[in-house]
Length: 480
Image 1 (cartoon, helix red, strand yellow):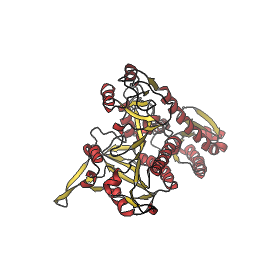
Image 2 (cartoon, rainbow, N blue to C red; image 1 turned 90 degrees about the vertical axis):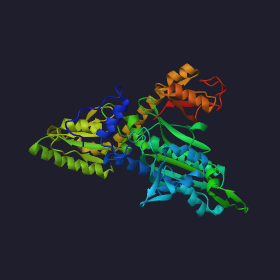
Image 3 (cartoon, rainbow, N blue to C red; image 1 turned 135 degrees about the vertical axis):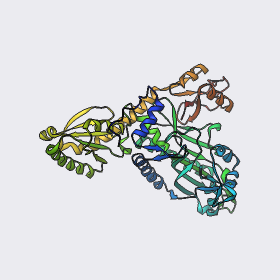
Image 4 (tube, rainbow, N blue to C red; image 1 turned 120 degrees about the vertical axis):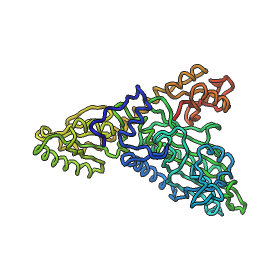
């Protein structure tokens, strides 16, 4: 819990980066590990991840996937089998060359992602069309050596799930890609209250070794984008590299079409940056470790009476399936507790003191609006599920309104370079990777995706004037 002598956090307008870093530490979501770039996820932050994990794991299993676990260590030669893959990950690899007191015969890579080791196993497990589709998911940690680490957003080690599937043909693999994209969208929208834009990555932004990458992009409150999850159609690239093949009904030997897809603890950073304000976190009720905090007010015998009523209320709320915290820390003032739980983003606070008890009411405070309301103790518990649902909807709408207010269309170079300083920009683009690099050099913005939804449109690239390539506008933004 926060200490009583701590001051308020830096405001978003003053320094958004400092606001974020201070908030992650002060709200006890995470701390920095002893190795540069590593992260210790504290219980409050890990509980948010557990709730994301539970919601996502349910969708994964409902769509026919099974959980498994694969090794953390991968022979370096495995990564080299898929040339584009090793080239894409090479700068981020952590490699073990010495173990057990001896130099290793072959360097071992600490898992940056698992396409190669899973491809090796798929080649053993698949021999016939009857073995397809093979739908596997893994909950694991991965290591990517980050030069500019930031808690939750970019850390040397992080947690994620990675789905890996094998199919008989491209059509089945693309269907699988759509299934994964859909449940990522549902988790983002319905659980995390995040409005996302879904689209195809350009060739220069695709996952290393993929034929097609779909990303989900969120705009956070400093006008930058965060890629919260991705899905990849790998074609037969990894199947050819690892001989993932099957005998068809007609007796022909064919290569499998594979996919991979993932969501990581970066999602927590996205939630913080999308919903937080100058007071601290604002957590969507479906992911809040505590959806309701109850703060007793009073001293001595009066406080004892208040606590009796609060325990009854707590029991009723638990009976409705709600996550409740009674803050009975006697060394802290009610005012400090109010600020502390606002910092930690609890959606609803209930205040109850001797005067409230005598009149049979309690004060309910909404974290999003700050509004206070006096409600009868008799009816209080039963109103909470609906209040939390309305809170969830309002939080989503707030984020959606912010995104829409900070999304602009650009038809010229000057418009594009100016608009990316404040948020999302939709612009026609030529599809040339050199042009993308020039935009990034001039503005710090990258092509986030080619949105799947949107009007068909052709014309000239907003940046260089060459003919547009995609038949619709491309989403540009500066990104984390």
